[in-house]
Length: 54
Image (cartoon, rainbow, N blue to C red; front, side, top):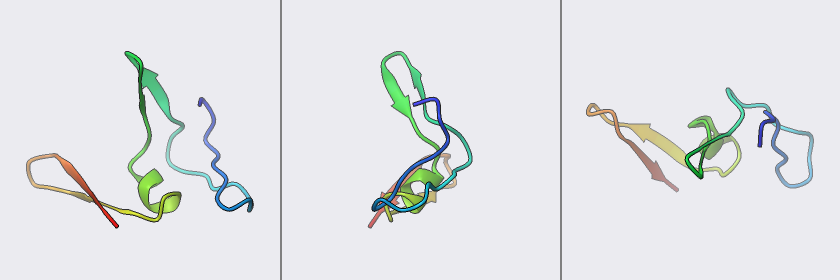
């Protein structure tokens, strides 16, 4: 939280576009967190929503 560095498999930290934030008890992470850290694919739709796929 409040830091823009993430560790994957105990390697060097990976920097992403933004640090996570908490708003009203919900944590928000940048979209590139899903690809860069979790190895998932985030896809935006024309209506402004995002889907996550493995």
